[in-house]
Length: 432
Image (cartoon, rainbow, N blue to C red; front, side):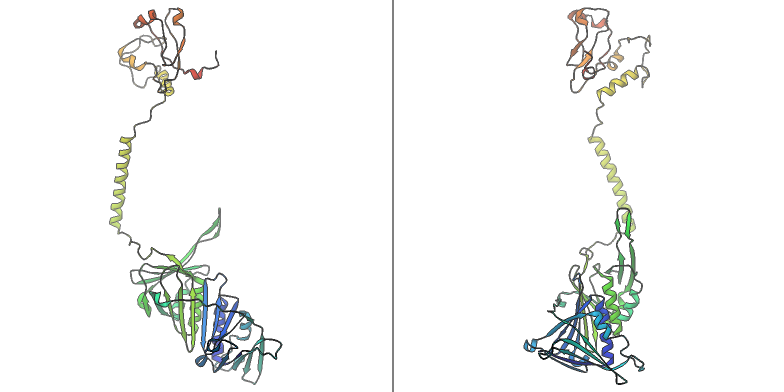
């Protein structure tokens, strides 16, 4: 059987309302852990990327506080879980009113009904109003084992501190639809808080438009600022706004502790026996702190010029190392046939009869009308254009690409006029 009884002043009850509103932005349920000297409200979001722990000191925050766990001795504890909305329906926003208007209370008494002679276990809250009216609320709870997030501040080399009221003015510039917050420490004596939303598209359809809002703050406006220059740390904008708004209700300073991206970041603040600690998962840029500074404009211009020179040198080297491609034999043959009618370069000596099937044999035309040199030594069809109709002069197929004649015809080759082969054997298959 556990014994838990404590009394709250109207101001303390109002602070319970504020912390429940903050925890409601992290999780739908809140866990209450009671120890002999303190009471802690904890919450863990669904993605397990944010953990909140708000500790109330028994002797400083409460008017009276008594907790006797059923087991565990001095280190014993009582833990239960309830819905955040259920507690908010009890701890409303106007519990504390200095003017004494309707809704204000005189005190709040809380106890836990967990005895063997009772059939039900309840979390009982009694609101005692100024007119003698007593409002009693009996809430069901669930016994749970509370897990705590561990954070080592000794390894957190980066830290800063700022008044929560000033920070609240800065976050009002953040876009309502932004999702992430990048905290960046520049080398120019400024810290940049950049909220942004990345573009999300499905094919041609844009599901989310990109949005970026950056707020630059001079490091002299911080109460303490010891952050490695160039380091980017990224957290959730929604979590950061909830923390800053709650810290502003306490009129205190917000402190941040972190080491490097992907390592936890912790926000801490508190006053009057209330200590708030939020541990958040982070991401960011590992190389941001060691990235080189941008080069000045003259160096950029010289870099562009050197890149152009190197590109020209590489092109010239490619031209020297790579000869032009070899023209196919079929294209050369087609060019020769067209060239007989419209030559690209006028010959030094005109033909005697342009309409004739034969051309004059000359030194200059010999090189122009040489047989086609097939690189693959494919067989070609050749013929003899002389008037001799001997059997040896009939058309023959040869592997060398030239045509053959008899010995007598070869002896009179100087007086013969012929046309070089212009068609491959593979193109005339099926004719015979």
